[in-house]
Picture 1 (cartoon, rainbow, N blue to C red):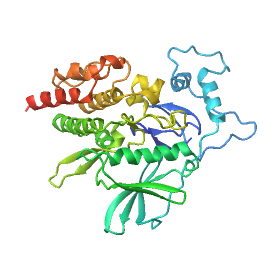
Picture 2: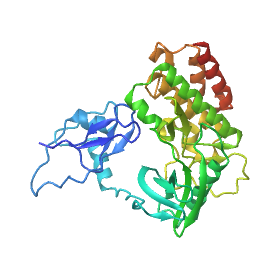
Picture 3: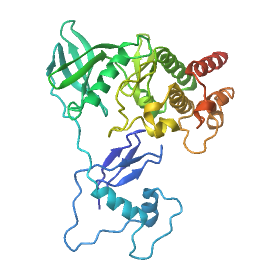
Picture 4: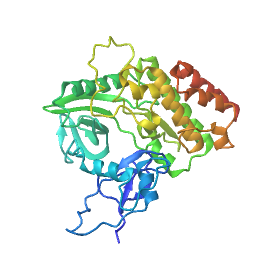
Length: 367
């Protein structure tokens, strides 16, 4: 009998036992609907002549994500079989960046433990030697350094952050490169991500609305400076302790930011292997052409986050207004959030400030 092998959904962090699968197979998360690839190193090919135990048809059909698929004849291959075989044969992308060891120095910064990894690089806790203070250093993935477009994008992330100074946005301190190591330095935020708080399911409505308003204020400020985030999601919001047992939400990771008021002279970076945004939080127009979205894409992503904060669920497929998911939600918020989630960008709020003002005024009316 196969042992338990644990893997977490990369979107919502739901826990799954993938012991019945092999590396390369796709599994659909029952919580958020995301499909993720099983990655394990303990699977082996069956011995010569051995026949693998067939899995239930319903399970294989569900895994393929094909609704109403017909059952195959005995011994026949299902759609899921063919998809899984194709996925297993497809070479998986190798880890794009090796971790730098603790104590490694980049100019005046001494790296410590890894705080997180993303498509663009790895974030380390570090010490700024000149001031003896803790900071966070993001080092660009080493397989991207040789590509000019990615170096440009990395520098744009630092430029986008440098233009922002707001309590609800992570501040940038420095940027530079040492040989092939490109990096920038951010304030160190001691606290979890919003995703972790959502996963714990301990947020009450008052705290959820407070976080929604804080994130909204940070986003309004970023837009006022001509910066569109384009990858707004709970993983990119850090919750800092303000010293009085309250949490301050800070938006981070502007790696996909677009400078609205630039001359558009930068090369088109959207044709790369890096996924531009995260599907469950991505506006429909962004999925079609990530290089030409405006701040209404952030309005959509913000709307998804507010919906999730208030209900604990993602607005996927045909979804009801938030007050129908959570009876404690003020019904006056329904048209505000539903408008932000309109598939047609022309029918959304043209500016996130209008939406944030509405959310704040309604939430203040509740207390």
